[in-house]
Length: 281
Image: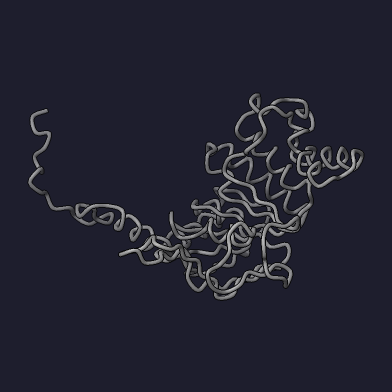
């Protein structure tokens, strides 16, 4: 369903001496219909850029992005993006927030009401349909955002770290909810995360990305049975394999962003002139 061939993305003037800075380089990736694919990597590796290219919010400098065999030339109703923030309209009720994409698309009142009810029931929020967003917890707001993303019935759901701002317990609940919804709807999902356990918990495949410039380092296939639990031994093993692949890339980012005193974990740091700072306190 989704194919990226030789995709590169550069921005003018962001590199050394005014040279173009590379966000992505030579990315080749194919995602089949109904797959759940996680993009995992350190900050700055181009995960969000890759998602935006598929969404049609940005365009590649080189290569091509295809959806259903057609080149992506902009956003379309076949793709919906869900962001880290729920981005709900505070002056609208839960039901009105979910209905908004259908109103924009000109869907009639009867069909609109039926779809809003279907997807709010799917995320177990039908009983909260008349509430305002500020009265909901963070996890509930993200479930409203998920219903809104699904209500237009796109083929592809693009998710950019949608649970990153939530506490661990709420994330675990939403992982199970998302897995259930995905199994029910059979959408194609591309899910961006920097959390290796989240990637192992959710993905059929995990695309591990390297950085400077962003590229695909390795793709791990996951054969784990569903439903999955975040603390299951097999999920932990897959997460450890992802973490091992990412360790060098994360150190590279920290080294580039830190000063000369930084040292990878486990290596001694020599005391400098300020080695006795704090003595006698």
